[in-house]
Amino acid sequence: MGGGPYGGRGAGGGESDEERQKMQELLNPPRALTLAEAKKDVEIDMFDDQERKSAFFTDGRKVQKNKDNSTQEIAAHWDGNRLVTDEKTPSGRKMSRTYELSYDGTQLYETLRLTRGRSDASVSVRYVYDQSEVQRAPAAPSR
Image (cartoon, rainbow, N blue to C red; front, side, top):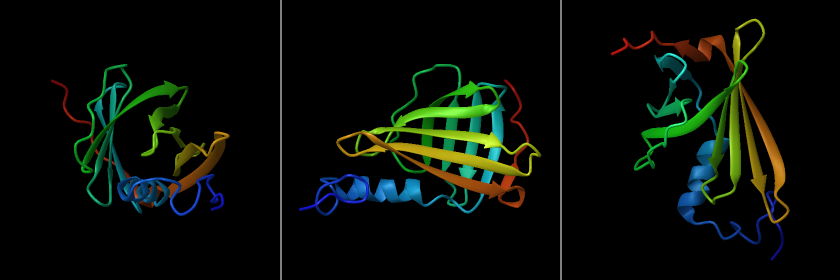
């Protein structure tokens, strides 16, 4: 048994099939995104090309545990003009995502940071979406 590229031991590093599948989903980004500001500066909704919704809440509320893969609630905060999350990987390790627009507004950058292995080594992956792949939906009417 040896260490894998992400610090695991042997085949799969002790992760369940479900955890491996969820990690694959993290590392294989959607081809297209639609963004909507549901409530001004409090909730940002993102829909991917598989019709899955991620609701990012920036008001400090306790998010609901995800019961299925179609909707995910994620605690987030603003760091200047960047939307930042603090999450856990399917195996319980630290993970964060940062979303920011390019300086000219034509691209959306998603940076995924994971800690892996016994040494908690950090791995960063950056995805770049062109404007044609990111649509802005109109803001939902406030209630």
